[in-house]
Length: 352
Image (cartoon, rainbow, N blue to C red; front, side):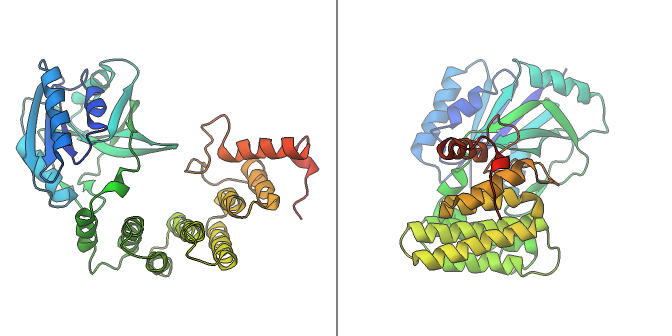
């Protein structure tokens, strides 16, 4: 019989943790909850409330010192090891389960339990409009191990996909609410690393320091430029994202009145155009960013034209607009634009 234990490492999440855990009740035989010792008392009270209200479930509360994501998760694995459970599911404190009906996950897992060649399973995680796969389910009797520093990965290549189950990240901005000591710890893990991925992660950490008022916007831009100027392993999509971040940083500096408007707009537009050249299949997003910044109809027309007429190498499903929606952000703005200008269709417009 398929049995499941759930491991959750949590930190200062009192506003979401109850509904996260509640969504797993019909699927999980044992909850192994690991509370970061630096968590506030509100989080601990919510966990105890969940345990009290679900006495039919096995809910074990543990306290743990955070030692980097990989090391801490590996310690969670070690403490949770039990052959009584066929599968172990690892979630973040914001991963709410979405499934068609109670027991759907167990039913899906039963298909894979007898296949001993499958040691690791992926689920789809919905992050706002973005959907991606992540290795979250592993066989309990195998040696469980995470590796990496900031973005840890399960140390297995074997991987199948659970199609009927989706985890919804119900607090996608949680990373920006991490404490300063956690951010500095993550940066310490990246010290001395000069590979492109580490440079990108370091730049993203600097964004968090900016939002917390620890540094200005210029050092953050410099960190993203370090990533862009790294010659080896240059992934177009990652460089594209770096340019978008730089454009957004200049836009932020304008709105905060710490950068001259004309200079800021010029630099931001230049960054967005660099992003468009870096990844031509996503020019529409870049033009839309420029339109949001400048309010010049020329760029909204270009964004919309690329949205429907341009040739896409990738599905456009990131933060700006999505093919999974009836109307994207661009479409909504476009409809309002046509209504205001009294134009019947895109064919009536010139962008030359």
